[in-house]
Amino acid sequence: MNYLQFVYLVVLLALSEKIVCQKHDYIWLLGYDGIISMNVDTFGTTVLDFNNNLTIAKNKDIPYGMNSANVTMSDANGNYLFSSNGVTIYDASHKIMKNAGILNTNDVGGYILPQGVLALPHPRDSNLYAFFHGRKGGGIVWVTKTWYSEIDMRENEGLGAVTLMQPLVQDTLRPGRFTAVKHGNGRDWWIIVEQNCQKKMDVGIIFFTPIF
Image (cartoon, rainbow, N blue to C red):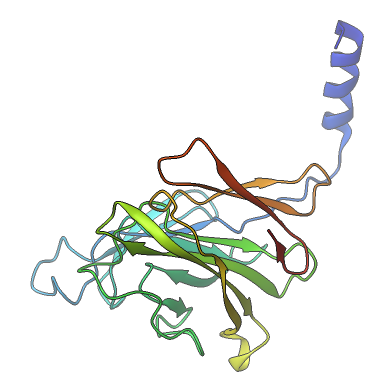
C-alpha cells in the first residue's frame, strides 16, 4: 500500500457515518460463585461489563463458578444471553438452560479444561448460537470427545434452549484449546482443535451445520 492509498483509506474511514459493532463479548463472568463463599464479602462471581465503558462488579447471586472452561455470550447489542462453565449452560436468569443437561461432571467452581468451551453467533441466523464443548479423558491430559450444540434464543420465552447436541469429533485431542477464526467470506467460521501428541489439526467450517 503506497502513501496515497493509505491516505485514501484513512479519509474513507473518517467519512463513514456509522461503524456497526458486534457486542457478543461485552459481558464476561469470571471467578468463584457467591454460594460457596457466601460469608466472605470479597468473593462472588466477577462481572465485567464493557457496555458504556468498563464496569467491574461482584455478584454473589450467581450460583456457579467459572474456571478454565468458560464462555459468556451476549447478543449483537451487548445484552447478556447465556454462559457456560463447562459443566452445563446457564441462561440469562442464571438457571440451567432448557435441554442443556449436564455436559461434564462437576469440578469445584467449574470444569477444569482450558478453552474447553466455545460459543459463536451462528453465521446464518441471528437467533442461533453454535456451542462446542470437550470431555476429558485421563485427567486433563487429553480430550476424547468433542460435542457440537445449537442454542435457539427464540425458545423458552427468550431465555433460549439447546435444540441440537451431537458428537462432533471422536479423537484423542489436546485438552481444550478450541480456536475459532472468521472465514475470509466474513460470515462463516473455521473451528480448529489440536490432535494430542501429533503435529496435526482437526479443522472444520461451520455453515448451517459444521462439516468436518
